[in-house]
Image 1 (cartoon, rainbow, N blue to C red):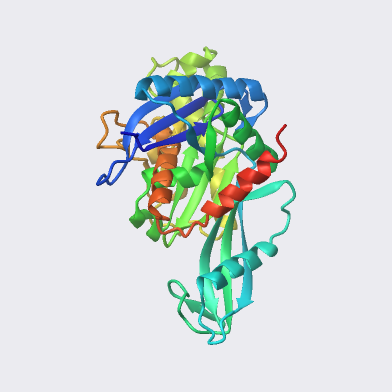
Image 2 (cartoon, rainbow, N blue to C red):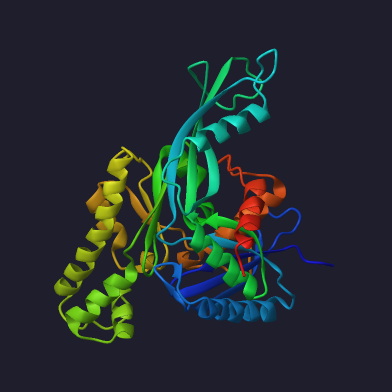
Length: 388
């Protein structure tokens, strides 16, 4: 019997993480068949700078995964991170198309297209996700979906998650030269949110903080929907470097000390000061963005911290003190029905990509109204036109 394999590929700056899942009838979450982690080469702060090295890293991870599952892996869902990832909101409106003024699914699509036409500063960017945030019908806010209601003018406020054209092209090319078919491109913070955040948290209002090696990405949620996605050029490697410089020790030893695994190399007070100083830099970027979107201090569910940097000792307490909000590291056991349980939240993106793939198969948008399927095919076809 052919397995229904779903594969998530997280191409990070330091690590390639690939998760292979199988979705069986009756299972609420897919079963993890393989977890593969390989050293990543050819990237800097999420960008591909050496295509051949990145392709080789992906191929090595793919070979490992195929040995584990004893099956050929052909298709993959790729997470998109990097500094070019971001989001914009725009508004647009259309007149109802039916003579009886009943709003249809087609009207919703036209309204989203109208909001897209209002976007500015889109040079060298491509839209990954279009997420309608709110609707108005004849000037009155619509609670829920507007289909079936009657009115003259439909207006929509839409969140557009975007990525750099060159970056997307390079990611697709690296995966395909490694022998894979790219089914979808999904913003990494959005994928991670599917793996480690609850509906209750998203409804109340929260921010997912993914601290990677060279970048930190955030996704802000409210009323179940993402409001904003942003990436900052600072990550846990900066903390490691600071510790190495401060105590004059090798990078490998500094990494263990950062996680509380290594022997103390000096006073605990000095170590705490080094870690807190760099984390404060990361938190400052996040706070500035929350102020920009007018959500500072207004997210009852607080911060959910994931990624490799989530393993930093005392990070929850430091985040609580800085933001004066609840803060917790992401739950560690992501796939409880699997023989290979995922106990490190650094896998949240790659596993979240698998969850996204399951949702696509089942026609479930996780309540986020992400309009992806046709859009992604158009993006991938467009990108391939420019590949040699």
